[in-house]
Length: 244
Ligand code: GTP
Image 1 (cartoon, rainbow, N blue to C red):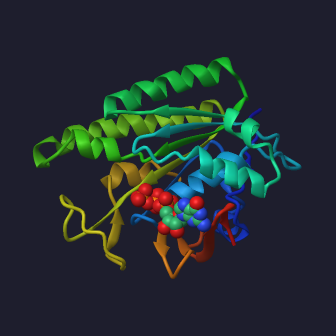
Image 2: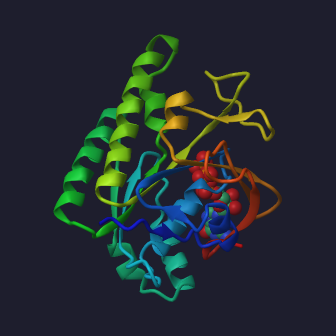
């Protein structure tokens, strides 16, 4: 029997917002403008995933990087906050760089094989960002349908992986305004929308909108969830990663 577990984000506020943390057998999507904290949450999760709790054994992380956002030195800093061995924390993160959307899909197929072979070892799969390569590979209106089809395939593979191998899937997404979908204008306001259209929206179990407040303070808000209240919580980005 597969036991659903929740991984702490490092911030009690953010965990509360998520109903306890980032959940297994489920896809959690965060979206927000540049610098809103998407990659920092992903880095913190790389460490917290490895910390066992009363009802969670801890485990390894698979990090798929599309934008060269992974920073081993950040992982070291965050490991120190939790008094963990920096080297062993890094060793428990399997890092893969994806170069285009097709490559990303093939990597995910290989991830499924790896999770099958190493049963129960991996607890978190991160794709940072899920959309960047699709936006590179499919430019312009004429290929939008094709892009959405490939994106749908990728998302359904992610869903299958999360359920079959009982892992949490954490993906980051970018934003655009409703006024200008083709050439994203990054603004801070209510008209900011996640990109990827209906497919990316409906294939994620939980979506969290992030925005900058002042300094290192960020606001997270549940976006359009059937299960979670549309509440907001604040968190901060520190040298030790994400916290209250
Ligand atoms: P894009 O990838 O550009 O779309 O943005 P993102 O949302 O992924 O941004 P990210 O999560 O990388 O957040 C960037 C912010 O994190 C910066 O503005 C800094 O405030 C903070 N940050 C990044 N590195 C450090 C660090 O080493 N120490 C501290 N204290 N803060 C950091």
